[in-house]
Length: 267
Ligand SMILES: Nc1ncnc2c1ncn2[C@@H]1O[C@H](COP(=O)(O)OP(=O)(O)OP(=O)(O)O)[C@@H](O)[C@H]1O
Ligand SMILES: [Mg+2]
Image (cartoon, rainbow, N blue to C red):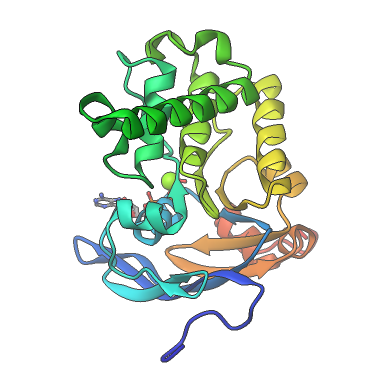
């Protein structure tokens, strides 16, 4: 690969020199990292440190001002969100998005379109092949709803869901497209402990199934349990990259979170 890219064959995703400015201010500056295939990597940092902006740029939902990135050796720099999804990279949003009047099944089928654009709509107008494709998609949607324990609501409108249930449905929708890498923006924020356990189980099941994950989260207990590796952003810059234990003991990380000089016994 010319001019950069993944450093070895275990690397699924690589980003280099990512930059994004809003109103002349750096939201993200010179951020680079790699994600090993099959791993769960956390991206943490104080409010406003650039975590969502990083995910937005690397999934094609925002235009980056600088940087390049690759999935499975293929460069995705500058492509649209749907092209990222078709290449195998999907995401969920910090503020859960669901189409309230549509059923859970329909919401998930829209998720599938991320990777297989058009087929769902063609199913309404097309012939037997399209109808078979739609039946297959619905079967997968039902399977995923079963996985998150919401199959009994398959035909119900999304508006009846609780906040935690919406998070589960959003994750399910992001897997419809069978991605290789999913970036989850705060999957357990504002969710009660029981629902956190369900979301955690789902993430572990996905990972066991071969899906690689980048998880943005403020819930440290959750991150420390689930992540193989932790990346830390502060003021748009990557300040640490290590195991959960290394990062927990990193004085720079404590400074970034506490916003003060280190006390002698702070570590
Ligand atoms: N669409 C936008 N327009 C203008 N400024 C933005 C936009 N999105 C983000 N920013 C700014 O970029 C910076 C980083 O924001 P970002 O949402 O990436 O932070 P974050 O780490 O996800 O924070 P949080 O933990 O609160 O979700 C902030 O200063 C924010 O105000
Ligand atoms: Mg955010």
